[in-house]
Amino acid sequence: MERIDKLLASQGTQSRSDIKKLIKSGLVTVNGEKVRDFSLKINPEKDMICINGNPVHIQKYVYLMMNKPSGIVCATKDKKEKTVIDIIPDEFKRKDIFPVGRLDKDTEGLLLITNDGAFAHKITSPEKNIYKTYHAVIDSGINENDIAAFESGITFRDGTKCKKAFLRQLNDEINPLVEVKICEGMFHQVKKMLTVRGKNVLYLKRVAIGGLYLDSALTKNSVRTLNDLDILTIFVDELH
Image (cartoon, rainbow, N blue to C red; front, side):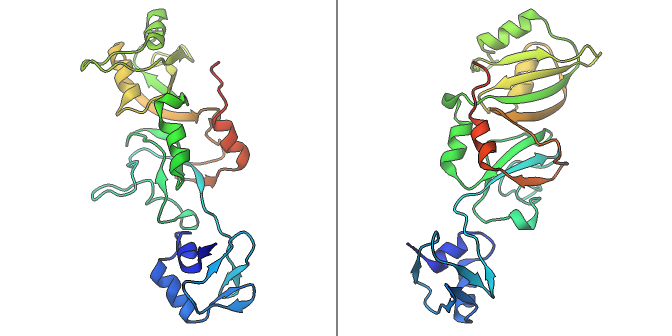
């Protein structure tokens, strides 16, 4: 059982004060009866709530997939830059959502957005070994030594050692496309790892998180809701 004003405000479309105004105006009903008490406790799984006659479908948690474009900051707020939360279409916006992990400003591709902290932790914690897959265009080809170095754990100049990662080349172009899989999310990690091996990244895109790949139907800036199968797919261990 939850307070009706708190429950409706948790959906993120309106503030708690706005919800109270709607209740005071008699525009909120529960099971067909007008509600006047802000503190009324209801069961969101059983009670039918309507605002101005329109049913409200209560969602405790939301899980979104975004095809993040380049030039957008992966944050909830930024005083100078446009963020991924800023570009979410209005129908998906809630006040409590945040990006899962990070994608650098100039990196494109798959980004998950949620309000479920436990879910986000499972994906971002290196100990959970959820690998993120990136496609990078680099300025020279790779060899077996590069692949072995990634699997052994790349070490940065400051002594930071990365966990086991995977590297493979996808084509034989002058500026080849490579695939990188990492289970961490350090700042500029993919670029820094490749730099250690003498490769400069010309373009970077995240294409998968765990077993979940970016929906090919999603254009840049687009967002869609994850279904239960999508969420299960994330945690498929495809590397072992």
